[in-house]
Image (tube, rainbow, N blue to C red; front, side, top):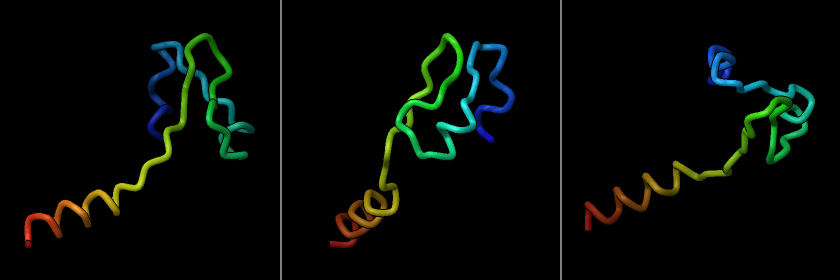
Length: 52
């Protein structure tokens, strides 16, 4: 959904690669890379640090 309106920048999503949870999910000239994150862990650690 985040890429739907960014085609004018040359971003073209490869739906098959996206569905396969690939690290690179583009099908055009501009690379689209998936970077795994763990936001919940970062938020929990920051909260614990603030509370201690």
